[in-house]
Image 1 (cartoon, one colour):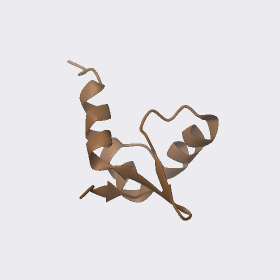
Image 2 (cartoon, one colour):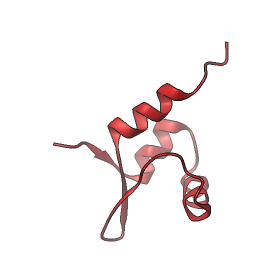
Image 3 (spheres, helix red, strand yellow):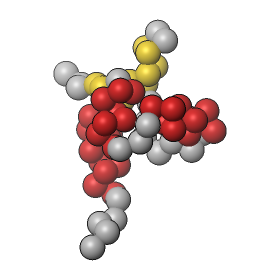
Image 4 (cartoon, rainbow, N blue to C red):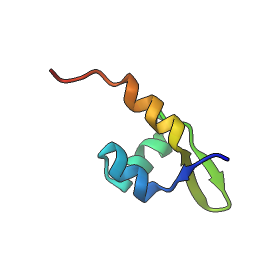
Length: 59
């Protein structure tokens, strides 16, 4: 079973505001694969974690 999160939880997980995520989705620049079920946008936790793993550490 795939674990999915909504935009509110995604926002908390990656540290971007919901509107910033929506803006990037509309521009086609959001890097995490998005699923749309009805009107709801969802992300697989696995995809979010893979994206976070690709980010370079600051120190």
